[in-house]
Image (cartoon, rainbow, N blue to C red; front, top):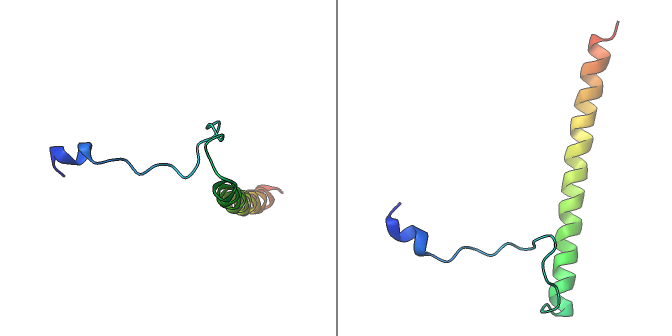
Amino acid sequence: MTFLDDDRPKKPLAHEVGQDLSTLSVDELDKRVTLLREEIARLEAEKARKASGKAAAESLFKS
């Protein structure tokens, strides 16, 4: 890594919560909705996986 790496443009976030949406087209909004729905599904799957692991651990230590 060189000192020039800091001058490279940063990759924009796909979406930032609270971001101004007035400049986005309907197509761009549709893409972001799809992206966010996929992210919600990914978060819910991870939450379910962790809840399952927690329940298994609690039942193991319950006597």
